[in-house]
Image 1 (spheres, rainbow, N blue to C red):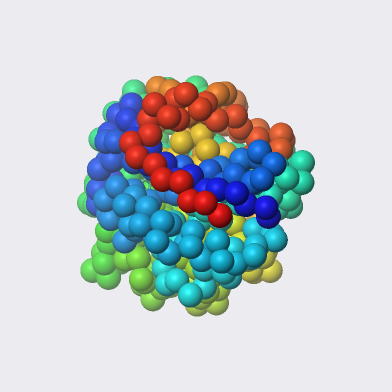
Image 2: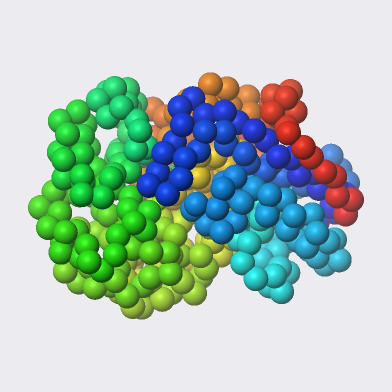
Length: 366
Ligand code: OSB
Ligand code: MG
């Protein structure tokens, strides 16, 4: 791929409002922006979506920084990559660290598409020109105020983070403000087998789905709950690989999967999951990791694949940022986002803002 240099920047992005989940709080979004430069001046961008703290996955911004610097980039330097679909395999000697791997892998997909003078959507075989967008309300968000603001944008579904035991109360209150738009909640693994009956009793709320009620390593309880409920059961944290997705399907542990590029290790694994899901006729949707416009562009492109049939966590730049690091912030209109059509991920990075927000960086010669 004619690689010249990779630059990794740690970028500090202050959220408009802190984002609270049952497991952790994000005030400052520390993310890694990865630039892959070739010999001809093309630059591919990726975002490593690990959080600063290990509340969602074991990876953090700093573990990813070290993995890239001391393991992944040295491996990449030694291997002769001709196509980004070889990157995941090249890293097969490194266990875990999907987000660090995805950070560089997605940058190479962007670079490859730019070298080919094609949109990344075209390169991965995306089918949709626009995708449906949903929005997520954190635990501390003001339901009434936020619901009002987001309803105006036409978001196609609302995802709530809820306190255990307060699901019914919160969802019924949300329905007052949101109306008929589908509502779901994300358990982020906070429930156990003792909550099985409690969850089952929420069936009458006609939720769009329940996301990841049980622990990260669980297939069994999700399977049990799915058998007992009409409500769609979705997996997020549990699916970290193609094999996890395969098991979720074969063990009947989920009705749909939230795919995040970072959580599964990049596009190649996401594409493989997509192919399984298509054969199994299982709908997918694209999850979010409070990304900057760079990560969000990758997400929107992923969501242009055929099997992404449910609205994703694809809220616009303005949801989290006063100022995004891309020139034209993402917009949601009538609940939809346009899939970028320009070369690569199709967004122009604002170099000035990017360097202003850079906390530290390193260059790695290829
Ligand atoms: O489980 O999807 C999650 C944010 C932090 C930790 C976990 C999750 C989330 C989100 C973010 O839901 C949604 C977004 O990026 O808009
Ligand atoms: Mg989730």
